[in-house]
Image (cartoon, rainbow, N blue to C red; front, top):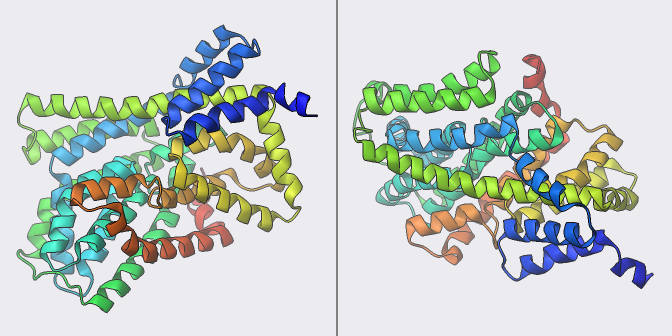
Length: 431
């Protein structure tokens, strides 16, 4: 039996992936190298490996990823984020926990612009963390609030995570976008309650209004219209998610160049393009390597065996669903979201089909789990960005993160127990 195990390509595919990963080799290289080694050693066709590598990104839905990344960078440089922050500061005034609750709202809103958790932390953290500290909030709490709530960016549509999930699971991306809206609001509501209770306990308040609400609304109007243009066009059938991403780019350029006039130099556009290319290259490299790994795993039978093992653990769908959530949460603590989709989703698709779970609901549940993982050490991407921006350490940020994690987990339980909360909106839109 040992001999057959050591001759099993599925076994070596796992080993070749895990060993580099635990020795801190980047996830994309671990995935791609293990697939390449197994494919070459077991003579699976080197030509097919190169074909699958490029086929991994040659998908129309994935075109939305670089477009949304570029749109997020443009809108941040256009000054849309700062004006939205000023609007919510004006709305909440000096109420208890007002600025913390406003931070939750702004991060939720900005998720409909950037589609990326770390990008949202970077765009909002430079504005909101100093503003909260100036209003008397504890700096670690301020950094934790921005970092955790920015994780919603992969749940609130449009979401890069939903685009990747839809491509792998062959699920309608507009349906996923519609399904993510209500759960995203539910998670934001639970986080809002959490930061309010902490603020009331510690006496955190905002600062008095510095301008009339009407003026703040007028200043932020073009920014507030951003998700209306993007999501309204998608749900109204005017354009696809990919086309919506392109529209968002031109909308951001229009606002930045002609309305706010903050993009007034060609060098700013060059800088934005360079940053967008860097961010896109990282994501696409992970997508290609993870897609290659998923193809090899399916070819050597690893996917079928993994699904069979999970199904053998219990016949009770609720027990298995709990186990899957735990696996996803732990995976989110260690790997990035895109890699998890490619590595784990092939194992989970047969289980979804076996129990008749709705793939749209499952995708939202899975994405919320991964959003929680982005703010859970040791590999908490959002926390690392928040720590870098605030000048704090991970150890300082982590304690105030825990109550928010507990609140978001409760929200996830509600979403799992009541699937109609996720599905009624896409059903209403006929998606």
